[in-house]
Structure formats: C-alpha cells, structure tokens
Image (cartoon, rainbow, N blue to C red; front, side, top):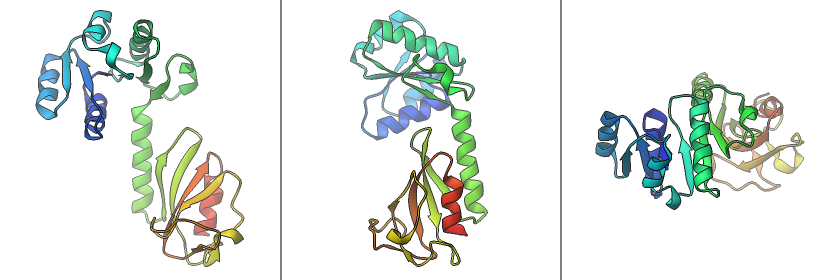
Length: 214
C-alpha cells in the first residue's frame, strides 16, 4: 500500500506494478486520483491516508508493506506508518523524509526514503559519467555499501594483472568482470578499457578508484 500518489508515490507504484506486485495507492486529491487511474492498472483509493478508517477500507490487513510517500513532511509520513502498525503490528513500514538525518528515525519505521538525496546522487553519477572519468556508481545497496562500475585505465595499478595478484582494500570485492560478461575468479585479468563491477564499503571508494584509474 502506498499513501501519496504524486511524483514519488506514482513512480514507486508504477515500478512495483511492472514487477508483478499488487499495489494499492491512497490519494486524497481527486484530480490526482483520476490521473493515476488513467495511467496504469492498479487500485487507486480516493481518501485521506492519515485516517484509520481509510487505511482499513483500502485493505491494510491484506498488505505486506505500507509506504507513506506524501509530500507533507517526515512527521506526517511517520505518523501514517505508526498508525498502520497500531492496526496491523506485523506490517512493514517505509516513510518519505525531507532531510537526510536518517538516524533520527531509527526504530520508528523499517526504512526511510529521501528523494532529494537520491536525485542528487543520480545527477552526480551522470555528471561523472559524461565527464569521462570511467567511474559510475550503479547503486547504493545500503547506507554502507555501493556498487561501482569502473573502467581500467591503461596505466592503472591493476592493469593487465590477475585478480589474485591485486591487493584490494578490505571491504571491496569485484563482483563482475569484462563489461559484466565474465564471472570473476582468481585468474581473471583486469584488462584496460573494460568495465568491472566492484562492491565497496563506505570510506574506501577513492582507494578502489585509484587502483583502476591510476
């Protein structure tokens, strides 16, 4: 169940629907409800998701997760999730927040979403990619782990060396090789010009990048 059908909620609902999930969207703006109903095949409920009766009528008891993604601020979304867990104690909760202090919400919800941070992260990736640096962050898996797509430079420390001979910093591992067409093994050679997917923990990205870029 998604509460809030504007930009964040709309795109989340579409992607979940495309992946085969049954999605219910609760939205109180009648014009937005009409738009959502026309855009994709999902259940759209016209109502205030901050009201207990609306959540119950929308089928909260049949939902695995409630995601409060309204644009009315973190405390509104946290409040919706808190009310949902009072009704259904085992339901998972995701709340949209409007600033980046995630620790502030520990224990209040299962996960938080900070769209502005994600948008800035995506923009930074594209800027670096267009700049030709040979470095692109594919995905932040968790707050401490990211996947980097790195192209080996001709004069890089790892160039033309087997994987087993490279002293990668602790907290990093090559997970795919040669433009993602090769499973990494100890004898895999890191060839200049090819891209490799590397999982890295926070704080060591720069060190790993230097190995690939020189």
